[in-house]
Image (cartoon, rainbow, N blue to C red; front, top):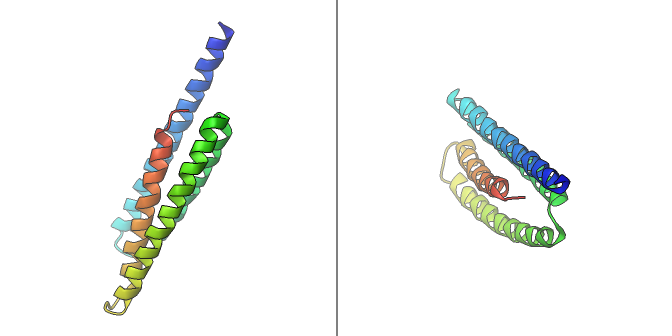
Length: 135
C-alpha cells in the first residue's frame, strides 16, 4: 500500500512538473507574440524567444535525466544526440539561406528575424516532445 502511494505521489509530481513546463512554454509564446505585435524590434523579440526556449529545453532535459530509469536514460541521451545533429544541420541550412538572402534584400534584420523564428520553432517542437514523454 505504501509503495502504491509513493508511486502515485511520484506520478502526480511528475505530471504537475510537466504541466508547469507547458505553462512556461505557453507563457513564452504569449510574450513573444505580444513583443511582435508592437511592430518594432522583431529580431530582438525572436532572439529573446529563441534563447528562452533553448534554456527551457536544457532545464527540461536535465529534469528528465534525473528522473528516468537507466534504460530510458540511455535511450533519451541517444535520441537527444540524434536530434542535436539534425538541429545543427537544419540551423546550418537556415544560416546559409539567410546569408544568400542578405545579398539581395535591403534589411538583413528581417531575414535574421525569420531565421531566428524558424530556429525557435524547431527548438519548441523538441521541448513539446520532451514534455509529452511519460516519466
